[in-house]
Image 1 (cartoon, helix red, strand yellow):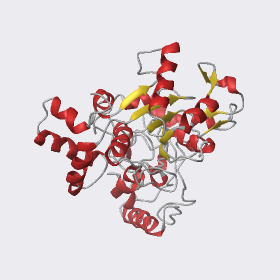
Image 2 (cartoon, one colour):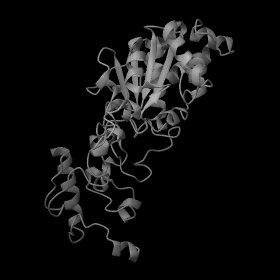
Image 3 (cartoon, helix red, strand yellow):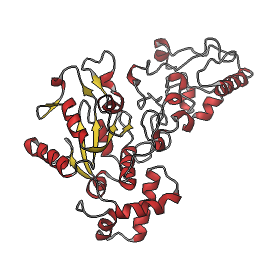
Image 4 (tube, one colour):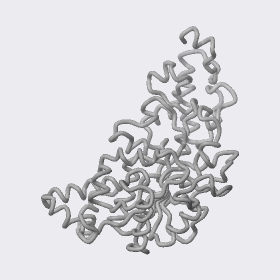
Length: 363
């Protein structure tokens, strides 16, 4: 598919019928968390849409965001790259290297100035330019150079969006986010460590379809994916409301799928689509696999307290007090559930932790 062809023309050349095209549009609507009523508008937009040039810069990162993108199933990464966008520069996925790679980046900027989409993953070091360079150019200088001609910027991953792990205390490299350095371009933050694969591709599809950035929250995250907390959409929420919590990773509560709040789950303060979109083609997400949410799509998640320390804990037996910071309604639900259980058995200390002796005894 050439850059001059519309997506509709390219799909027809590949033998895709009108019905198949509409199915693609329906999948696109679902990907962008849009209602079915938007399918005709998406079809009309995609008929005329041309592949945008995309330049992807990787700075202080672990390649986890790219790894995540390669696991996108709707569209697949090859479908995204070859049919939807023109990925003109990407350290990991491009065939070229060295001088040829940098020439490809410069050509993409020159030919698409003011129209290309810039994607960044990884934080940017400011303490010393030598901490991270590309072709002898510091990350700061390369970001500013490429951002100048971009139509918009997508900061993929918590490192690019908020500084991420490199930004954690004591931040020896002086790591900062994209928005700390670029102030004159629209920026879409797609945080996560890494982000969900289809969330990355869904944001790109939205830009392709409508030629504009999606509606964003106060942290510049797409509301379609980051508009609700994981806690509000978690299938374990009913156990939270009933006051049923796992006290250890292998106790009876954990085996019964009770709420992981006491084990440090950050779901109540974390906004992401994990509980609904899930991972691995919609198979599961950490909480469903028995692990509490770490809050990786929030700013400073690495410094935000112990991963297995609850956001707030009652100071006495839960049957008498419920000091939670989630709101009066939720606290009342916790207390009521605890009181009902207290009628059937003697109240015990709510926060008795699993000790080394307990583990040795097999408890």
